[in-house]
Image 1 (cartoon, rainbow, N blue to C red):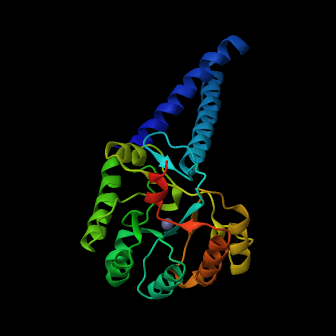
Image 2: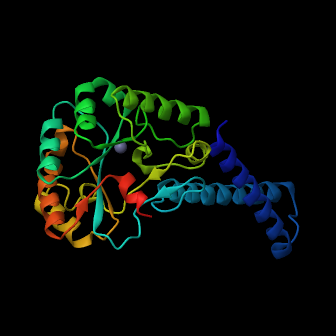
Length: 270
Ligand SMILES: [Zn+2]
């Protein structure tokens, strides 16, 4: 069942009917068949454009999700913050990442891609052994929009199996690839009582500072609030700046009195 497509088509039909219903009292009956076809085409085009715009806003929304529990930060007075790491893991960089977190007694949350975790089992095992939180970021990192609920289930559950096979026992939170979701993914997540974790700070997604580790650390230090969730990417060769920034970010956060905890601990406080 592809809820995203069903909802989009339904919305186009609904908006078209409303458009046509409004047009007649405003302008009167269409005098000819040609005019009627033209009128219908205009209404349809507007309905498709509105639906497309709405779907785009919704699929990327940081703090709104139609179904299921989702969080982008939490309200708390305690100086706690979560550092979340998307994609990967990769065997190549796991030591550097673990060393940085370990030096600051920080607990990271790793939203791993099932396929990458399967191909880099020692990295996943090392993250688990070091006590970090592991989250689910789908198996193939495809956009989970305009897909069926079955596809979402396959992506999520196969990744869960990889995570559990590494001996991880904690709760497995979910973060959609590219942060995108419409109805199918939220429907599945709600049915399965899974929490969707977004973020409210994304230093290495801001092109103006993504190549500058010092600037990324300063951005986090300037914008962090108790309960913030920070998104970082440290697993690919192209993300060297983020790996350099990691200890700087940890230094800045601990310097401000923050404790870096897993997202689940952050949620326990709410
Ligand atoms: Zn991702």
